[in-house]
Image (tube, rainbow, N blue to C red; front, side, top):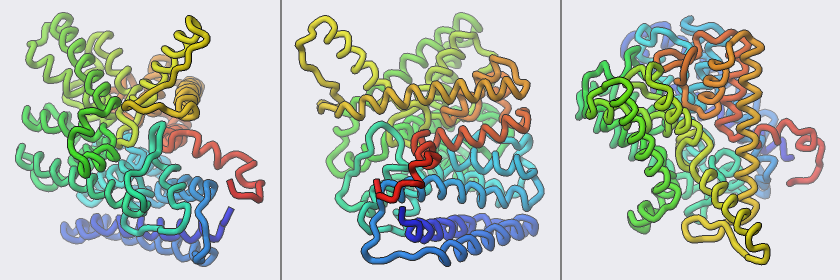
Length: 486
């Protein structure tokens, strides 16, 4: 592995992290938040110090090649560095302890959005903005945004993009990696601006509109108020949130292609159509359940069911009402949607609908081959045959997610949390949702978790955001011992 090249690019990444703290610093200065300004100045200084140290050992030469190992190392170590540097403002302002600061930072960048802060309204505006920015930067991907702003045009840059992107396939839409990253970033910024404008027109003030837009498009779910969305008393706002959460659950690569070739690309996309059907069917069943079991008005039932299915399936985690009090069937469908997640290439977490589609199609082919052993059949997606390695990769990822869910649940049970709460927190954490049921219910977060569980929550949020195998590859001894590039 070219450690010199890795060190140099990590130095650029920590510099980028420091630059991302500039807007909260300006906010702190504008509102005369002395503690906030000092905290962000310290954070930016630490980012510069990290950059200086990394650049001392690093350097980029014309013939350098970014191989698979370099891509994995830059992605995993880069996310770790940014998460650690991102915790400094929380700790330096004195609002959170060391462990809680780390949890808040990792939860923000990973898009989980589960907070340890019980009263966010006491936080200065600069910290609130930083929480939303961490959601936004981590949503599309730290590396993708970094490459869009400071493109690395050397050979093999696609290996960085592959290491961070989510879903069973890692396709690019343009020949040059820098152009690909810029196109994704432009779509991301455009949707954020449209969402901000919509929220402003729905009655939110500019600061609230921008913050909520960033966390909506990033499907992170951090808010700037303690209350639920229902306390805004604005049905139009809930409708706008539902729309943008669903849009953010679609593949951003699909939107890039649709912008170039037409909206029929979105309509014909198999994964996105199935995702919309999942939302519709889940919302319909929950609406009927709420109407029958809770005697809820049918229009109110449809309103809350649609909002929370969109919120859970997109893994945003916004809450309009305490769904932890809903009937078991409704809670079961919400848990199912959070486990499935959104589409591959979106900012949503979860297993991804594409993998579920591939697994069901693979199961169908296995059954058909049992009946007709001589038949030749292929798994297809969007009318094209899918390589067997991608299909088997979906199966491997499904297995890994289940194992990780079980492992985290057992760790929490060892830490004194009961079985039901352990399973609920594990599923919501691995799905990058945030709110769940029980101890981490609709109106609570990670604040009630014991210290050991909080520490491991950071680990599993990190694993979930980078889809497990990239992190495990870095921890493999062969990753470091082999002298040959992969």
